[in-house]
Structures are given as structure tokens and as C-alpha cells.
Amino acid sequence: MARKRKSVQEYASGVLAGDRVMLAQAITLVESTLESDSLLAEELLHAVQSHGKQSFRLGISGVPGVGKSTFIDAFGTYVCDELHKKVAVLAVDPSSSLSRGSILGDKTRMSRLSVNANAFIRPSASGGTLGGVAARTREAILLCEAAGYEYIVVETVGVGQSETLVKGMVDFFLLLMLSGAGDELQGIKRGIMEICDALVINKADGDNKPAAKRAAAEYRNALHLLQASDSGWIPRVATCSALAGEGIADLYTILDEFERAMRLNGFLDKNRAQQQVDWFNDLLRSEVLRQFYQNEDVKTDLSTYSSQIALGELSLRAGLRQLRNKYFAKP
Ligand SMILES: Nc1nc2c(ncn2[C@@H]2O[C@H](COP(=O)(O)OP(=O)(O)OP(=O)(O)O)[C@@H](O)[C@H]2O)c(=O)[nH]1
Ligand SMILES: [Mg+2]
Image (cartoon, rainbow, N blue to C red):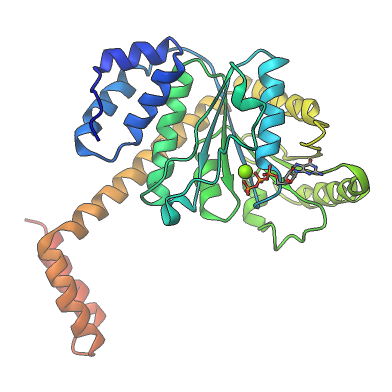
């Protein structure tokens, strides 16, 4: 597929001017896995990096059907229309690496936000590993911020690894829940409680309202048992109805309180700096592994050693020692 190549300057000035079409094309460029696009993407990210615009990054997770898309539609519309801020919605989709589909960031469930002039919705990048998808989402965040989007929402399905990845790229992590669905079902383990900054019980409407309030009280008690995180922030519990638009403004108040406090105590910047370092280390680690396993000698040795080990002809220790001496020995 022939794409007319633009120069870095063309992309950069379009993005910095907030041109949505250019932004979408720039994201396509950084998502590209073509070696030939890689350097251009690097230069583009460098060219837009010191834009000096401020942003807040919000991660949202929850089991399928909990109401993430409906929530983002309501919340995003509120932020755009009432607070006059620009909102970008991105997604990390764990299923996309398997099916190459993209179930998140869907515009159909975000009917209001998708036509809002202040909003930008980008479906999940597909293909590659979950880590690869997440790496590209992270760069898409940077481009959206350069384009003047002040509120960046990153959505993911709550199935484990993707939450940790999203947590590592946002300032605030919000977990959407249902009342009465059972903690196990919703992946509520201690681990996930520890990474969330707010736990929000959705569908608190109609007959479901009392149960949602009860569940909120229970979670509040459970969260009290956890220690405050490095930031000093104690996770909040709230209820909302994304469908009816109830509780959305209250939730924004919580986010705003967090943002103010974390800018004041320096945690926001400190956390972002740490996320960059962590990210760099992750990428380096996967690059080293990739290079190692792509090496032809390694491939041959690995197949020989594997069959010897399977047959019991070689011990694990001996195999490891021999390969270590061959590939990592000091000169
Ligand atoms: N009663 C009620 N229904 C809701 C609410 N929020 C979402 N729903 C409904 O729940 C269903 C799922 O909502 P989605 O927003 O698509 O959920 P999701 O978490 O994005 O789902 P996936 O994209 O499949 O992971 C839809 O039929 C919504 O209309 C709410 O606050 N109250
Ligand atoms: Mg959805």
C-alpha cells in the first residue's frame, strides 16, 4: 500500500497545530512496524516533544460489559462540553494481538463523544504482542498531548496483564465495577486494588442503586486495609450511572483533587519520569531478547540442545553453562 510520505516537519507542524487528520496519520506512522517508518517516527516524536502543554492521563479498566465505553462517552462529553477541555481516547486491547480485531475505543458506543469537535477517538492498534500494542499506545499519548488534548483516556479490558501496562502509562487508574458480580469474576484481587486510584461501581441506577451503594461501602472498608501508595493518595470508592450520566461530575471532582494534589507535591512529574525509565528498560529487555532469539546460531543451538535435554542426554546446568560460555563469555 503506497502512502505518500510526508516530511517530519509536515507531520510535526500539523500535530502541533491540533490538526486531527494529521494527528491520526502521525499515530499511524508511530504504530507502523515497518523498519523504514521507524526513524521517521523517532524524529517526529522528538520534534513534538517540547510542546509545553499540560495534560492529565486517565486509565480505565473493567470486565467486558461493565460500561467502559458508555462511561467514557459520558465522562468525555462532560469534560469537553462543561469544562471546555479537549479529550483523546485511546485503547490497549489485549485481544487484538490474537484476533487482530479491535473491540475497544469503539465509536459506536461513544456516539456523543465521537461527533464532539473537542474529542479524538482512536481504536486500538492491532497486531503484534500486547507489549508492542502498549508501546505504540504510549507514543500515541505523546502525540495527542502535543496536539493539545488535555485529557487522555486509555481504555483496556480487565483481564490481567493489560491493566499493569496501562497503569504504567497513566497518572490515574480507575477501575469500573459492577455490584454483585462477585470479586473473582471481576478480577478483584489484592493486586488490582493496589494499583487503582479509584474504584467506581457503575450501573448504580434503577433497582440496582441500593446494591451499588452497599458494594461501595464494602469496598471502602476493604481499601482501608491497604496502605497509602507512594503518592500519599488513598484510593476512592464511588458509584455512578454512565447511562444516566449520574455521578460523572462528582467523579471529575475526585480526579481534579488528585491532579491538584499530585502537581503540588511533585508526584505527577516524578511518577511520569519513573514510568519513562521503566518503559525504557522494558523496551530494551524485549529488544535484547528479540535479537538473541533471532540469531541463526542461537536458533540452531536451541533446537539441538532442546532435543538433547528432552532425551535426557544433557543436564540443564550443563546446557546453560555451555550456551552462556558460547554467547556471553567475557572476551
Ligand atoms: N443500566 C445501565 N446500563 C449501562 C450503564 N452503563 C453501560 N450500560 C449498558 O451496559 C452494556 C455494556 O456497556 P459498554 O459501555 O459497551 O461496556 P464495555 O465495558 O465498554 O464493554 P466491552 O467494550 O465489551 O468491554 C450496554 O448495553 C450499556 O448500555 C449504566 O450506567 N446503567
Ligand atoms: Mg467498550
